[in-house]
Image (cartoon, rainbow, N blue to C red; front, side, top):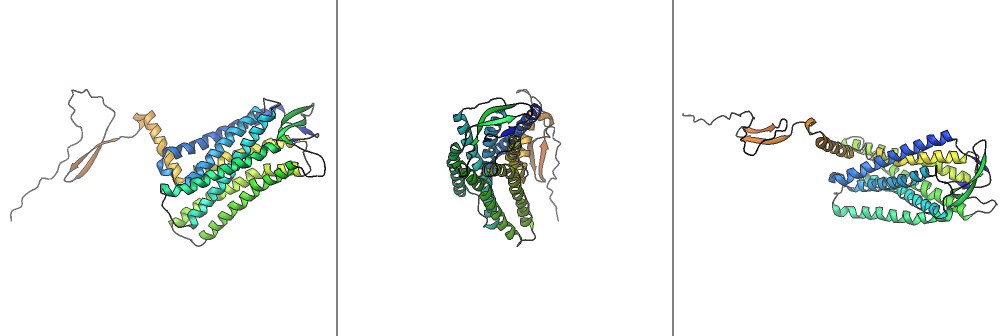
Length: 363
């Protein structure tokens, strides 16, 4: 994404592009691994399928799609020049729709935290999940509809770029700037983007968490208070990450398209800010899911299963039987695996348990 115009724009040197390419590749690996791990844990552990985690699942899917669509395209931009108009508009539609779904999934998580802490406890039955699943579905449909304005904004734009020694003209997917005093439709859509995708969700999340803070002030002790306070810290961290990672990119759009216009190092600055924004796609699930007790326990359980399958000899003894006596029940464990022929008679190596015999007392 960039801005077309006649002003000269500086680009990174070859060493800088190689460094940025390595960072983008690492960021892509980080986003895919963290979000795919949370989705896998959700699908393989029934204990995680509660209402709150459905919102986390929606966030992970959006993060995974955003990283899987946006960053590979960023990598291809280093090698492919002069993209077609169709590919430009299709990509911008996809990335803007997914971006909107990711942002409002965070808003749904904030709403859910407010619902859980301020509302009455409710059972997590299968019937109670459908309204929340419906809310997630409506959010995605609205996001897909909102992304339709991207093809109206983006097209193949020409850039005059310089690496310090040579000046060339390249074509790239971006917003074409128009000189003049009148406001263009593209500028109006950029302003709407800033409000819909940054200011409004930030106000919603801040309002939800402000209500939660006010509620927690009424509870100053007890296990429930400590647990809710921990959850509150996690989601407040999410809001702070959303603000810090999205503010540079959104502010740059406003400055370039609604302010003075492009500046010499705009392209370099935009690539760095887009990378910072992409990092948030992986940090979201690390903060919310992987530091959550239920997800951590599910991850440990899955790792034990994998270890038991890969290295069964290194796993501790497994319970194979129980002896019941009048004096109590005794459990015995297996040693190393032993192969026994079908015709063999195996004598148990379990130590005998002496049980006191009943005695008759004569008076």
